[in-house]
Length: 323
Image (cartoon, rainbow, N blue to C red; front, side, top):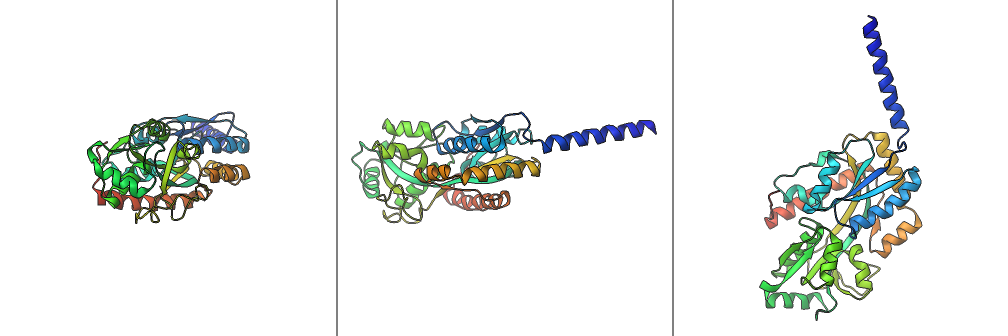
């Protein structure tokens, strides 16, 4: 009897300690946001801007860790296997957290491995070329691509990311051919386009905006429903004569599944506070994006919708890949 009572007391103490630790979260332990891409891309930019704000809100340092490679799979797998204690998060995005589920026949993670926190930023993509190219419009690019398809290529931040899928859609909608050249993130891809290593790219607007404004890259069209306020002279794909080319890339915060609900709520509140700050809103707008801040439930429903949407696109294109 005494032994049973002892075990009960020990269990109660451990349970109480667990509740206390959860209530004290975050408790003198740095939080890591995994970025499944190289530095310089929209995923990385959004993570670093938000990390600074959440650090202030939570009173705990937040580290951004880049784990690039394999179309975001390496970093996403790392996050899925992390302890669900609120100290490891991931800046997920449309590629590894929506497109990949239908693009790859097998993946080392699944949708249920993650608990959504909030949408961080949504952005249009931009069709662009090196400014040294003698191409001024999307129609001129199509003409150029059709002249010698075997010598033409397009870059992207990685297989299965929205820039890659946008490039494939562009080929389908215009009837052109171009070889896909994937990189380990938007930063390396933009650098390669600046070096004229491929013909064109359809990139997330934030990662290319500085080079566009500097006159080093030429924006030909954006994939949004309407023109970007930051690039008012650049037409939409529809205005450029290319129908059914509306693509919106998104980036959002997720935690490993099983992370306690009170911790998810604290993360959400800190992220929402940061995303509503005037300087973040201004910065995101300057990059051509819109800040998020929806609830975990709303973000989860949004991800489910995106998975269904891109599954249809992948099936139509027959773009299945082996992992």
